[in-house]
Image (cartoon, rainbow, N blue to C red; front, side, top):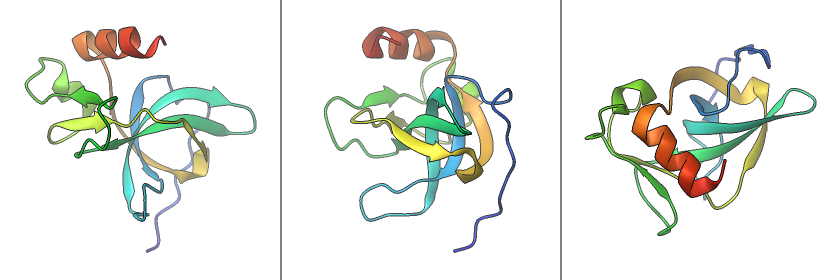
Length: 114
């Protein structure tokens, strides 16, 4: 599948933004949302994949019942898969969806130590 290439600069991408990205998860290479957790050198970002399925009990839930859910740009309950940070070139980011805000951000920061 061909994904349109988008050009983002490091100044546009902020920690806790949610972007659609070309990222592998298991055997699936489909574009998926990811949570930006860090900017690295050489036009790369560290991110955590987001899925509608929780594969481990440590996954951080993003509930569509939370008042700040709309800011995420996600369409339904999801989970931040926090097993490991995935380093991606910025050209694998497709589009910005939203970001963690409010209670969701506070809870994620508390749980992750970020």
